[in-house]
Length: 402
Image (cartoon, rainbow, N blue to C red; front, side):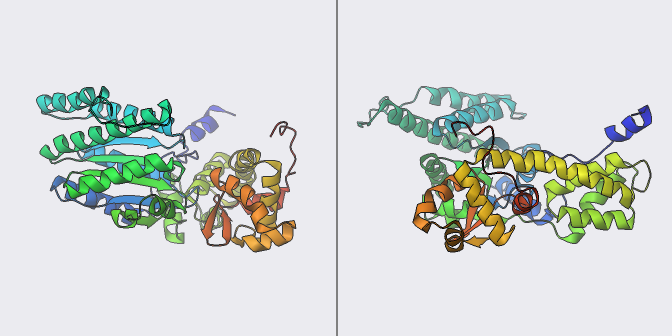
């Protein structure tokens, strides 16, 4: 590779990667507008609802959260962001660390008020149920620790929100992979937002997760359906997909010819992650301006291989051998479309109840979700095609002890 080719690669504007902010957030204008309205209303001390974004993997939910986080922070709001691990102790730790960091970085001209907000964390750190004189019996030390963490979190968020209201500001807590969160902690957070809303205090959860997230929230607290604005995040339409390719390239003085652009739109299917992957590959294969169809075709092979080796194979490896057979059956029946669990049971030759453990394990791993009662679907676009196309073995050499 010569220096000129290296220079072209360095200027490549496309950024495939989990949660990477794209150079052009195309097709999400209404989602951003909804959030900006919430921030503006918070500045006017008007109470509103949190926002929940749900959709398949690869549609840009994390990138959207990052963008909204930056906007809120730039507009004098306190923001903290975590990704749920599903382990309650870990997630409490992540929350406390993220909130502490957010307060330490909060940009306020009033240093006295900033000091008062910082004191909130110090005052809450030593709080416990027993210290408050509450008589309670716990089944274990672990249960007592979780109750103390719950109390600390509620006091911390409540006191911060009170201080922030004086500033005509608010507290925005961004949580990715929210469907993974332990049900007890999820219930605590939903209850906190509900209670603070009744007190007209500005605390909002901005969450993102898989398509089953609205149901997870409603199961945790029945009033959750009224506590949030729910927004489905889907693949981009053709117009937005074209923008997602064109605008980043044009920012570097490069264009795609019409045939190349048409092919890229078809290859990506409108999924933001695929847009970045195929856009990056086509750019790297090109030595001309505009980028031609031949570059897209050459890049297609490399982009698909990267997707197979990374996005798809990594998920395939996470499943057990029995679970992989379940995934193979899904791909045979529906490709990438939702399939009935009854049809899967018939194809595999086992009763649906017997397969429920496998199904739940795949849902817990985030590989499939229940699209509606009696139906399951892949969480990753193209997973069914990957299985059909590459026909990976359900038994792998790294499965020892799996």
